[in-house]
Length: 176
Image 1 (cartoon, helix red, strand yellow):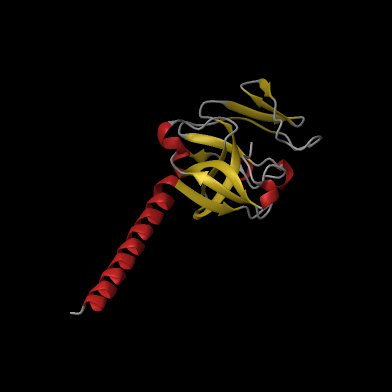
Image 2 (cartoon, helix red, strand yellow):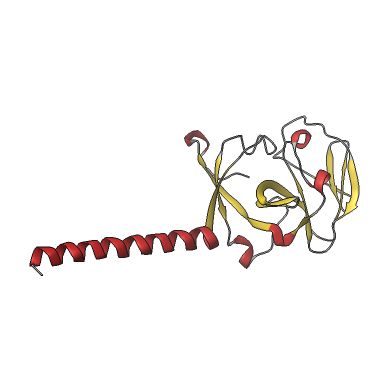
């Protein structure tokens, strides 16, 4: 084999090897580290808007427990092939009530600075969150298919915690 043919074969081998490594790394990142989602509805407005692109850290709950207020992407309980995004409102064992447009956890009012000012929503509860479950609500309470509709979320359906909005450019940042 001539030198130029060997160089071409070597170059093709290197390109193929680089592609295989890139594909393996992309799969590892997507399966275990980060995943990207597009917000399809207004259920989390004003925090997340329709067509916002978000980054979700899939590893977040490997090392720590979910915390009240986290924005979480999870498998929809009625159709696990679909992903939903909502805010974690209550943890297992807590008693939750929505009364007069105020959130109460274990009888104490909880401030929700992320809700639109003046938002009024229907009463709900009180209900106690069962073991191994979470109560999830959308920030746009009057337009959200959430735990008030489909019940408590099993904690094994969690995909990950929202870490940032990456698109559109004017909304890049950390959502709270």
